[in-house]
Length: 398
Image 1 (cartoon, one colour):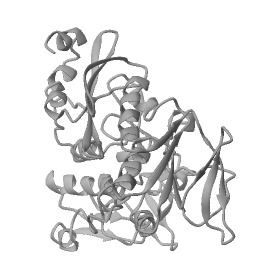
Image 2: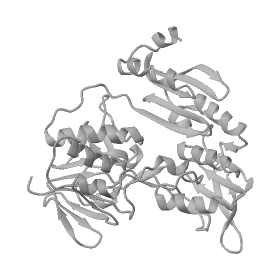
Image 3: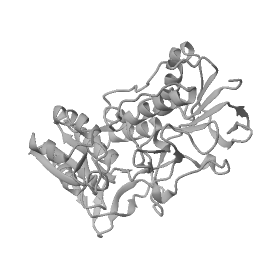
Image 4: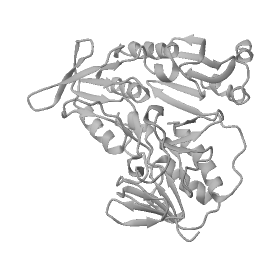
């Protein structure tokens, strides 16, 4: 290679890709571009230990690591355009950078709700700066409003309650996590939050925020006409892939209705020669032939390994990949193996207050297992999921 491998995006997926390329034997020039000023950091703690003030540093690798691995880390640098014919990426300062291979790892950006007033005290949470601003305001808050009961919203509600703050959590769907895990398991999550004192209102959306004379949020009007008071608010209604800089590149993108993102094959190749995609921004082709984005921490590392091997012409791992993700809420770890979905057949096989275990199936085949506080029971199902075993087999041994 006469030009470097350039990775655009210095989050977890971008960093893991750089690491895997070095681990796979690549010794050439390697450039890692990040639009934030901080060293690459871990995002999951931001909604938990970090916002609660239990940790200050979630850095993934110290500065010396990049020197040792000869990774040219360029922080505070944003890619604004891509010319796939010339193999050059344009940066925000007008400079351009040639590449032999380019990896898109630009991640996600929080969704905003249109038509809302711009007020102090209204937050989103994606990056480190968002978490710092939220943590600083949380220290003086008595009441918080969380809009959206997905994973981020639920984790923040739990963190706020642990900090002694009253919480109103609103969700237009019938239960928290309904679109991800289905209403049956969502109801179990709802029960846990209500037991912790969260004012959980499902089937209800946000109409508008209320402001005080200083232009700071003091509450909200909900879609059912009711009002809630709040000293701060967080909007957690999902994210969208950061792909605007690819508009004129010719790179094939998924339709927004399908979740958006950069279309790629099962090892990360995009529609352009020498261009790859990894992590939250990437819609990889899966076993079913469908292409979808997977927004989970473990997925970033697994994809990075596959991509690095394919890019360098090495043999990729052959073991069956069983997706895994988790969410820490209060003292409970909610874990999921496989591809559980809201439309699956769900069987709750254990329900002991805060702890539960559920099997997910399609056409009688086990697709996933979700458990709260039941780590061993979840993990022992990995082989069954990988083998596409009949769910009846697992039910018979329960």
